[in-house]
Image (cartoon, rainbow, N blue to C red; front, side, top):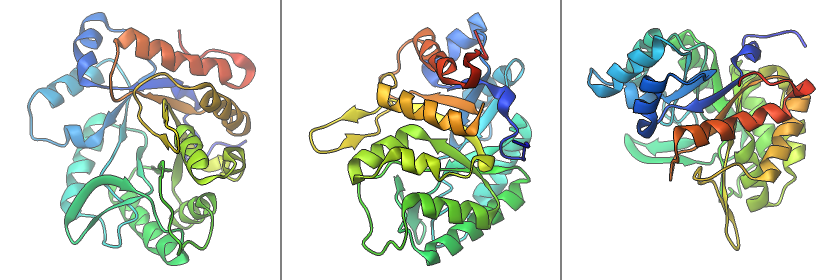
Length: 282
């Protein structure tokens, strides 16, 4: 498959999230890691320890930015001050692409600080694609949008989630951060087949994949990121990489964070499921 500006990152291998409890270990031990993903908002500051650590990390590792507050699905246009700060950070990190979530989260300047699911309507397709195009043009970087885990659906929806995703990325001409754990969580919560979702994703637009752990409750599944990846998600990851090919993959572990070595070992399990079975990192 010819490389596009979205799926041209096959050499990035397996990354992990850069988290505060691991700062000291990384700086002192200098472990071999393909790349780190940072939460952009944690480093959009004037100075202080976060930027000091980030600059030291950048001396040795590749870094990719991932955001949690762009809210592409908001009816309002993107905040220009936020975009300016984000662009300054992209220049610092030289991130090859930048990602955020296909969701909404604020109204009239009031923020929920949550990743709320979209109504899958044609009107929402138009305003979401408009916002993504504006962000991508401003940042001058490829943008990849991430599917979120969801626990509620809108009666107004006019299409499936994967149809909505496909329409948005085509009209915005952007990439996809395919979170296979989120697909699995939403599939179990809403009663659809996660394999069908993966099979409808345009492979040429997938820049990155997320894997993570979730928690099973009696009536629903919650995206908790607080323990190892479960077997059904690994199986879905294997199916996804079988379609998409080698793709930059990131393990998310954001709560009850264990040692760096444990997180790193869990991330490297992804090598077992890559096409041809050849490891990208040791």
